[in-house]
Length: 113
Length: 112
Image (cartoon, rainbow over all chains, first blue to last red; front, top):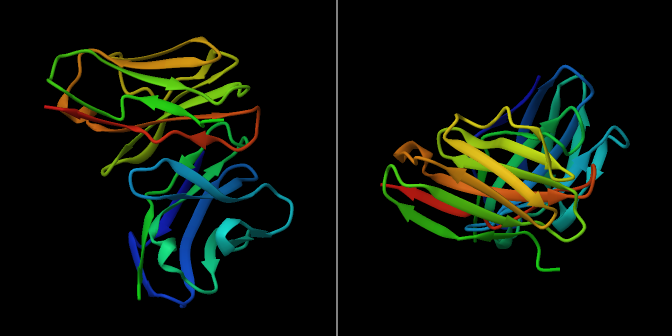
């Protein structure tokens, strides 16, 4: 079985500051890991995914995440926050690719000027 | 392509009524997923289809929920009878084999 835990339902940063959104996973098989972003009244958009290739994964909009097996973590980072990054971010895990994603509870990112 | 299209975007219905949510996947995609998003439970996978065949419906909450995919370009999620606790945002997503799933904008269901 797979599960993810996202630490912090809300994260606030200033524009230009580092963004760090935390995700820890549990999986009985080698995991596939994902980060999705949801803007208000929109569906989810894939930011990036880890599928057992490089442990540092780069995604869209300047985001990246590092898979750390020893820590069972897949934290999302961005060096410099932009106002347009304000949204809800979901970490997800699967043991079988994209077919059955288990999502975390989400972290709302607030960016202040 | 217009992306995954869901209808209606908003639905308000009275308890006990039948509700049908609709989804048109991206043309050429062969997998379709129905998710439900609530404050209490977050995003949950209800059911997914591959090549129009239901593969896993273990997330369907109870018999009041049913989903169909009569062809590659259309799927429905039906709730009968509806209850207030079914109020949520329902998302449909589609993908080609084991590639990225693209989500629709969702249907916000309110059962009063």
